[in-house]
Amino acid sequence: MTAKIISGVEIAKQIREELKAEVAGLKEQHGVTPGLVTILVGENPASVSYVTAKQKTAHELGFHSVQDNQPEDITEEALLALIDKYNKDPAIHGILVQLPLPKHINETKVLYAIDPDKDVDGFHPVNVGKMVIGEQCFLPCTPHGILEMLERSGVETSGAEAVVVGRSNIVGKPIANLMLQKRAAGNATVTVCHTRTRDMAFHTRRADILVVAAGRPKVITADMVKEGAVVIDVGVNRIGKTPEGKAILCGDVDFEAVKEKAAAITPVPGGVGPMTITMLMKNTVQAAKQFAGLA
Ligand SMILES: NC(=O)c1ccc[n+]([C@@H]2O[C@H](COP(=O)([O-])OP(=O)(O)OC[C@H]3O[C@@H](n4cnc5c(N)ncnc54)[C@H](OP(=O)(O)O)[C@@H]3O)[C@@H](O)[C@H]2O)c1
Image 1 (cartoon, rainbow, N blue to C red):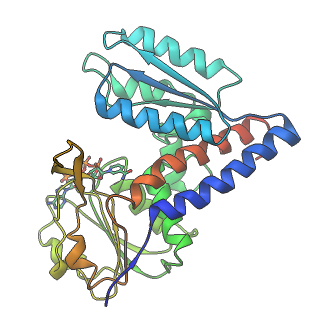
Image 2 (cartoon, rainbow, N blue to C red; image 1 turned 120 degrees about the horizontal axis):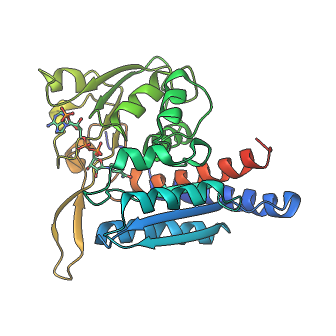
């Protein structure tokens, strides 16, 4: 069996087209323009490129987009004051603080300072709590993107054995939680593996749907995957550079071998990655609609 490739590039493109039309409608019919601010502290090259990509997408979709660059040595107090300013700004519906922050700033304190109604990253405990009890909220972007990929690719999750490798707060825990909820792309029987799991292959081999977010190149080999499984590879590992100096990326799954066994698989790059930014945009549109009393 050679797996169907679930293209995040294609699905993200489709969702962005939908969002573009929705933003145009919001402007025309309601005079509402979704506003997104991305706050970048310092000049970490990876963070600069993530923030640039987010701003570019926001701009393409017709958002009011603000890039707020702050120096590496900004005080925690000043950063909290900045967040407070955007919390009160009616033109801004979504606030994103690019992580990681410099060591002298308490990340938790900063994330908790964002108004939960503008927390389009879905990291505020109010949104995390609502997610866990299945209330409407801003879902964290990467797991949200995985749900969309499963749904739009017609993967049946109801009753499926889903195995998640990784238990981080941004990917593993939320995707495990979402897939067990009574909702679209949910109703699965979920197992979560981590570094203390005694026999990981025992679990992964049972998986109808395997979601891998370990951050370890090719940690999932073909012998760990059931014939006909759906494999979602979240991992992004930089394993070298091309002669031109471009990073060579690989996922957490041994793609070439596993694709011969799986029914469907996401590639790296071009799988989950493009979905994450797209879901940030979707959350921002949702925030704008809520602010305007339209959702
Ligand atoms: N495409 C995207 O948009 C996107 C978004 C977010 C993250 N990512 C990528 O996804 C990967 C995971 O990110 P993350 O933030 O969730 O990472 P993380 O915070 O480092 O968490 C990794 C998790 O994987 C577990 N783990 C690591 N090695 C393992 C192994 N050999 N066997 C079993 N479990 C193992 C760890 O277990 P312990 O808890 O026991 O340590 C931990 O729970 C990274 O490559 C990251 O770059 C991609």
